[in-house]
Length: 114
Image (cartoon, rainbow, N blue to C red):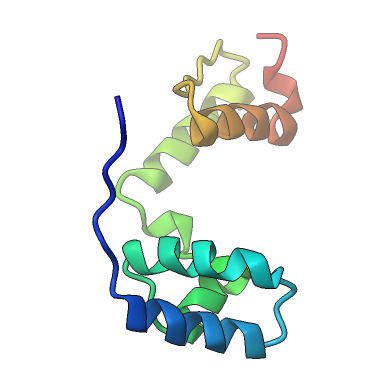
């Protein structure tokens, strides 16, 4: 099986590569064409949007309590910890699921053995 990629807008790619080369990010010049091609394919074709993607800051994150059901889930988890109830937290087996499971163990060490 062979991947067939769609062509990108080469002008956008070149403009973004030039902007990233001049913005002070430590990106190897040989990597810029590939990197900017990938960014443009993702719809990230403005230099500031690319910088925010490549150099994220905590201030750019959304408040997790704005997620639907998050407050009630946290309340329930805290109640279970206080009552010493058994807790099962399931994370799927991909990068974010594995990371979330690790963070759960790191943030709530009292749950590790239950």
